Length: 224
Image (tube, rainbow, N blue to C red):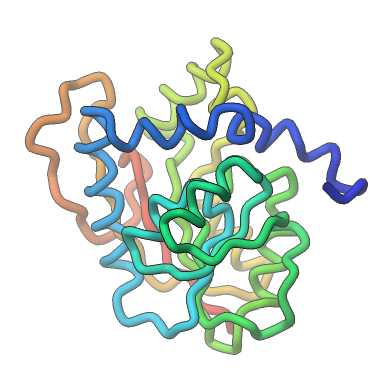
């Protein structure tokens, strides 16, 4: 790990120590209900966006594999092993200092990644640098003020290993971050409008718009 990023380790250490536990959630009863809905939400946003595609914070590769994103980057060596087994070409690195030349990608995705960034502003600046002119950034967000975001924040306060280092953001805060670095909001899709403590049967399909009470929002920005 580069010495200048040692202070970032607390953000991704849980994924290094518990990559197996994290990946297993997607196959749990709850994961099998929630994950496909989040994937569909992102597919609606990614549809028609130009390639090549890159996912920052690819983790174990669940989203990248489901969405057809062939390239990823992540700081966790243990999570990367899972992603590589899913056929994703992964580099180890940090969102705040991407190892790619300017204009390398047409579309970049950060899916449930912003809450684990040590320096979000630097990460958005790097996305803007690596994107081609008129390139797209897609953010998958658990909004801070939604029932889901509040539940995860409480779990973090109670010591949950994955949510303890997380800092949740509102949709408006993410829009402001993107705009600060020359990206314009284009559209959004939202899902998980149900309360997170329910059984989650008969979940509603994603709907257009940025709904901060939704548990998951897919947001599309374009570099100007």
